[in-house]
Amino acid sequence: MVDFYLPSDGAPQGQGPLVVLLHGGFWRQAYDRTHLTSCAAELARNGLVVALAEYRRVGGAGGWPQTGEDVAALVSAIRRHPLAQGRPLVLAGHSAGGHLALWAAAQPSTGQLRVVVIAPLADLALSDRLGLSGGAVADLLGGPERVAERLPEADPVRLLPLGHPVTIVHGTADPIVPLAVSEGYVAAARAAGEAAGTGGPEPELRVLDGVGHYAPVIPGTPAFRTLLTVLQG
Image (tube, rainbow, N blue to C red; front, side):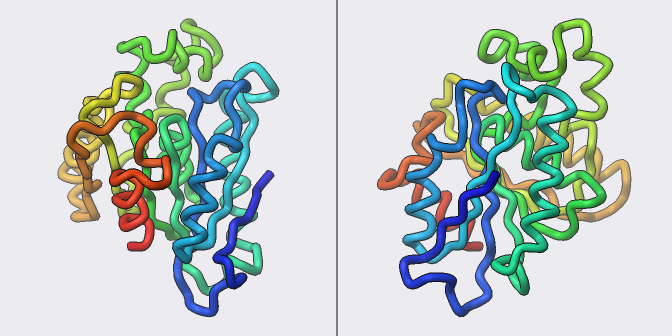
């Protein structure tokens, strides 16, 4: 399921990016795309075409691999949408949506795009060790007994080097997904790129001093302005 948000004058005549926006909520059924509607609407008011997407979640019909499969499928579907024709694609996600954006970008079927993630659960192994949100990673992967088995296919740090430009926006005052999770992903990406000798783009980490988990997706905040600037490219 996807809701499209267009600039107020309708689909713009230019060839700016189409932003596929994935919500967070630790992949749980209780949290859906509605909590990013104001974010998507404000991005559109600033000239972006936004596709606010939904996926199956834990506690509903989701979990792994269904949740990931949904995102990979919707990216492919959006590429075929008339609004996407001739436009660069930006795959963006907040928190758990950031994990899904990074994971989907690593899939062969995804094609060329740019990735922008906000406070992402980019390192599932570290997030699991930290016990974030009461064991949310284990819940996604089918229980503690399935974590080791499924991390190689589900954890973005196991799918590096990525080969796409990535920008990570993360605040230093985030108690929900600590900055260390993004730092771990960036370090792993750098090491993977060096080992592969690809010379590809390293992730850019934009650290926002004193910013918490939600401010970058709340219109009107300075952190949101940073996100907007990054998405506009």
